[in-house]
Image 1 (cartoon, helix red, strand yellow):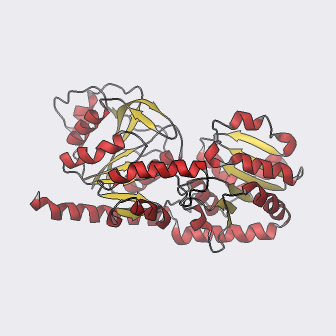
Image 2: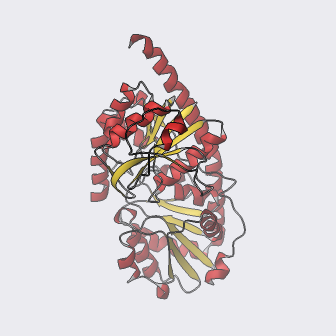
Image 3: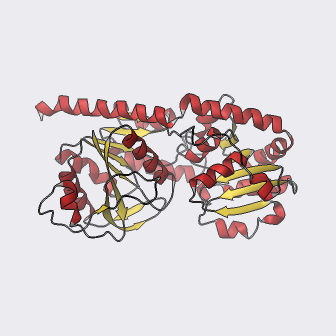
Length: 406
């Protein structure tokens, strides 16, 4: 089966990791994959004709890229779509991007299109493009959410779901990560049969417990980790306030991995004197794994989430985890796999829990063991891909049944 994957390659975010991991896994299972992504300075188009056997392709707005030098990226043909701007949150395509995408799909002739939605205006014309070309269309809908709308951030995200729901109803399938997320979309009018739950997954062989010299490096007996964007929706300041108020002592360190708009202002208030270490964005996956293997506790205080890959990676490394009950994260940790925080008064809750986890390693060891077992039971990448294969087959069969009547 040939899958045309429309996803994200930069800037780094959860969508980037998702596209990389899923497309690599599909290739490992024998699928043919063409990777389409946005670029602000797309190169020359002429090589496309020889790459896909096209003639007189015309537009010079997209081109296959050489195979990624980064071995972690899928070893498959890449094609760029023109955009004016892209960020970790949304993408602004050029006016010609829909025409370029249409011509690309005409030439590639995939069996199915899978869009890992990048919050772009192109998301709303994809159903029309694929219907015109008679191509089955699957989408993974990533925006974080909180079904209870307890704050301004979660209310804003709910508006995003309201905006997308009428268009997701036109996709053959919309993939979400949990039953809570599915129920939100169904309440907004997306037919339930068009919404599929396929949770994120991690490779438990790669993300696994193992040796790490992290504590020696930072001269700490206990290490707590946050990994993600330093942004309002991640609620990192609530964690930092709790850490400072808890007076964790010189033998405990809080490592923050990631960048974002609030980093500089927070660094000015919280630093080494409080045991806070700002590591910034770390591109090396093995280094991120080393950090998780050396950590005692992983904390995710977000106001809104989807299903955090960083959380699953920490759990798979047997790290005790605390996360708010937003998105699907609370569902992942429920029934003893970790500590679920309410999004209200996060600082107050953490002020009690941080010293507890500092002083009781037996508790963090137990929670770390349970976290990894939860991943092995429900959230492995292998199970994720098997579910995705089944979904692809269902979509193709349904399209074939409808074909004679069209």
